[in-house]
Length: 439
Image (cartoon, rainbow, N blue to C red; front, side):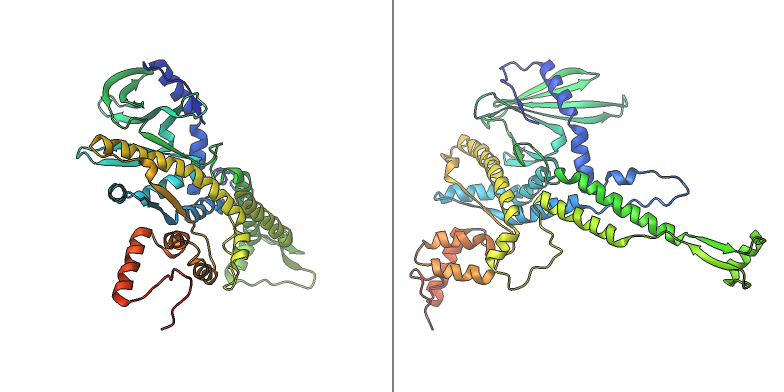
């Protein structure tokens, strides 16, 4: 849900309450998406007659899709480069304090599950620049009505319990480009408690949205997920019926309950030539069920663009074949990257505004952001391509090309290490002319 409003200098409490009421209508959807990721799916609420088997199985493709997509997207950390080494080093120190890689993964998880995630930047009591993930269910982002749709305000609301009055209190924090307003809402009455100025020069809450529709990665396959749960559960019920099938006795009309009990204990039946005993079972067409399940699984992978990794890739699979298998996944990740990058730039800009306030003179545009794929690769082909590119591209460009695949997080440090090893061992590890020296 995207809200666009031109926010005035004076914030009206009625507007805040209206926006909160509007946002609460989205909460059932957000809660359902979270539950489906956790495996708390609709099949678990199914009730059948007490005398019937009621197996409720969850084959959780929702968590599979999200976890796999996060692995592809954020399994290899984002890397940052800049010609301003001092600026880059300062930024990396701030990132380390905030465990930036973990924050990025959690934001990617939030946006994958619920379609969007939020991060708040703040300055702590020790004057350190901090940022952390917010609960998606608690945040309302408001954009202006310009073509750029810049953030104009953000609302964070959450409940706390007052144990003296035994009542819940809704805390409301309103963030603008200059101030933070702290409200308390009790019995639908909004009361302003405090106002603080911040110095980020922008709304210090950043939205990381998954796509323009703010849909989760598995939201489109929920009906397929429900169907596969239902099919598996019904099949399990049928097997339970088979285990609990009836014993049919023919020609033994005089059998008493006591006789049946003795049969169970002794596990022996005495029948004459005119009597017969057999179990009454229901035939299960296994091939039809398996074909149905197979079709649903294929539809889930096609619709979500996440391949079935249970099928092992051949060890000698070419790079082209790997790209073909992961083509749709790659396109989805490209779209994710563009939106995530825009949010990361906002994070860096907010941090830079505070650094400049402290006396620095940095430009956030000097930081280059690079996402690194964590998809399967043909390492032999990659190494061959790297050797062929040597001498055609700069060494830095070449290292940037292979960085994500070989685990290089800092290209500049890697280049320094190469120079150190060249001086120590008199080696040229990546020859500029593309030729490999034979020792």
